[in-house]
Image 1: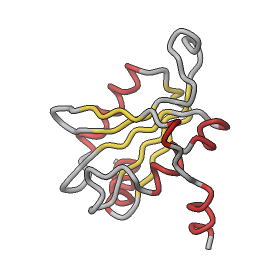
Image 2: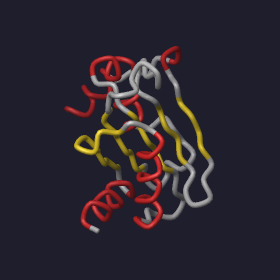
Image 3: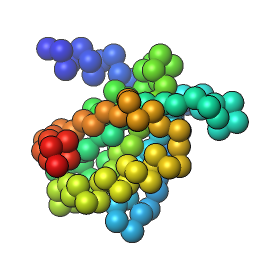
Image 4: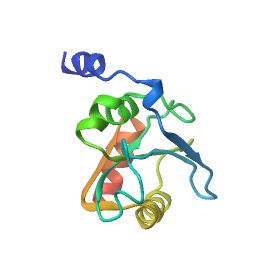
Length: 133
């Protein structure tokens, strides 16, 4: 019941989307900058980072629940945050995810106290492995 209500609240607004795709030799990924984020204006401000690991059938798809929940304009307007969605075809390797997160943190002003790792199915397993590794 909660999931149904949650999904109905999280609608994607195409006009507010600022999704980027990055090819990386180790792990391709999508990311979204915080709503209204500007390097000059927000130079000293740190933002949360939400990392969403997709399930087994989610490779190359960016319409999953994790994406909608954290990239939705309503959520971003109340809690601006970076959203990072790595792409994997064969499971999650902490040896590839951790360097990706660290390099992302070097490029953007991420608040190290507010890094959230979530996943569904295969992504849930990857989240558990990464959090306990």
